[in-house]
Structure formats: structure tokens, C-alpha cells
Length: 445
Image (cartoon, rainbow, N blue to C red; front, side, top):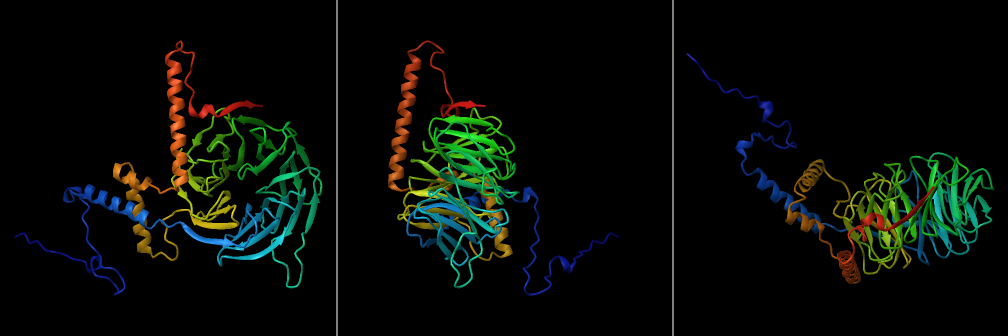
């Protein structure tokens, strides 16, 4: 005789304590879940809608400067410390955790052109319109002591920017020439020049730390190697580049913010054409900074907005703006990849979330699991028209919308004119030129 018995193990369904969740038996056989696809689609749609409902990126406003904010300096080791320079020569060190100014001092006569922390974060280097490089202690002075620089270096040339090496004690300044300095010496170790009037921004490569790049007033981008006696290469664009940022994860790539409302990502091994042209701004782009992951970057513009781009996509994934924010001069991405800082003409430093709908504060494990599940669903169904439309839609200021329409109409008009000229010309006389090649004039070695 055959006897069938039901055997149950209490460990599979009985919880050990009252605080635990009840265990739910699940059978993942697809034949038992015929509506799994539609159910997931609805969940993805709801997750996308909730994403937009909770999209409140603005965190706080840091006020205290008495003139427009001109530059930022990020502490290499402390996430809660940010240095900002202003047009009136004042430098402020902010305690971001408490949202207050920890200390302030007048560093220069005129604009503060650049701020850089040493590799260990113990010293702050500032340059200004008074042709001086000043070295400050990153620790506040004792009570009763005056704020004095540790060292003051007088330069022969005007200074427009500074960048510190990530691995050693050298730093570089730009102005009429590119000068390589050492922290122990008051004279430059090396001076590099390639026949241009002014270099107005400089940046060390964070990975290949001997390589650095400058943007010049003759619309060119120049690459240097501090081990060489001469500059390496130079590429000339149709308009001037305002700022340059290296990708911290892809050592060969850098992005420049240009006067023609676009940003260009280049590969140093092939400077004839940019890897990607990033559109959407409607006025000159003033600053750019990469996220520490290297996957995204943030740009600041004279059109009173900041935009966040994926490094390999042409159009921005998000736009941040407020009614009071005027021309945005500088921006920075925090080293924990969670916050973005912007400094603008109306003397304020603003702090934003890098992910507009991210929840701040303590997140429980079940919440974290649910957020990860929602992200996976949104990624899976990102190409569906309704989800794509909701995820892409942004409200923009009226002046930006009008400028976008005007730029679009002008571009369409140029395309129609070019098509008509090509139609009435000999075959091959009017060649097709890709958007990438239109903006690069020449490369020099």
C-alpha cells in the first residue's frame, strides 16, 4: 500500500520573533503569473510618476558673500567643507553640515580667480587679480589671532586660474603663461607657452597626474605634460571655451564648457572631432564639473540654470533653476556624489541634490530594497512612450523656453537653406558636414 504524507518544516513559515516579517511562500513559475508583464509596467509607470512628484532638488541656500561668487574649491578629504571665492576678494570656508560660514577672510584685491586645496587638504591656494598666489592654513586661527597667509608669492604675470596635482606637491597656474610651481619654492619650476595672449582656466588630470590642460583666449584648448619642455597638442574651436573638467574615471577624456551654448567631450588621443556634443543650454556655458563616478557632469550657464548630463548623451537629464538665481558662474559636484553646488551673480551659494527625488536622511533596509526595485523597473521600461514622456518632461523658465524656440527655428532655417543650395549645385560640391566636425577648426601638434 502506498501512503502519501505531507511534511512541513516550521522553519520555512514560522517567524522567530514578533519583530520579523511573515515569510511568504512564492512560486516563480512564469506559467502561474500570466500578467507579470502588465503588472510590472504599471509599477514602472507609478514609480516614474512618483519620481516627478518627489522631485524637489533644492536643499539650502548659503548666503554671506557681499559680491558675486566667482570660484569653488573642494576639500579632498572632508565632505562637509567647501571654499568659495568672490568678486570682492573675499574667501569663505563653509560648514555644509550645519549650513553656516565657518570662517571668512579677504584674500586678494579684486577678483578671486581660483581656489585649490593641497593634496592632503592642509593648505589652501588662492590666486587673484593682484598677481599674487597666497597659501593659507586650512585650519582656522586661534581666538584672538588674525587671519594671515602662510606664504605669499608674487607672480610676474597676471593669474587667471590654479590647479593642484592630485599626487605630489606641485601646482600649476595660468595667465599669460602656464607655470608649474612647487610648494617649497617661490619661483616657478617651469614656464610653458604656445603663442597665446591669455590662458583663463587650467586643470590637472586626476588620473594621469603629469598631464594638464588649459583653455586660451584664441579659442584653443592646449594640452601640457609637466615632464616636457614644450606643450603637447592644441585644438582650436569656433568659439572660446570657458572651463575644462577631466573625467575622473576615464583618464583620456575631458569636457569643455563653450561660449556657443554647448559642451564638448574630447578624447585626447583624437582631438580632430569631439566624442560628444552636449546641447540644451541657451546661453554661454560658464563652468563644468564631473561627478566622482565619471558617469555624469554638471554645467552652469549664463541662462540662469544648471543642467546635469550623462557623460555619453547629448541632451541633459535634468535642469535646476529658481526665480531668484541669476547668471550662474561656477558649479561643483560633491565627492560623495550626492550634492551639487552652484554659485551665481546674486551673491548666493546654492546646494542641490544630484538626484532630484532622492530621499535624504535614514533609509530603512526595506525602503532601500523598494527604491532599488523601482529603479530596475524604470530602467527596464524606459523606452515605453508614456514612461519616456513623463521621465523627460521638465518645466523651464519662460525666457529659456523662448530662447530654445528661437534657436530651433534658426537651426531649421539653416538646414533648409543648406538643402536648397545642395539641390541647385553640382553633386558633391556642397558636402555633408556632421555636427561634431562643424565646431572644430584645426588641430596643431
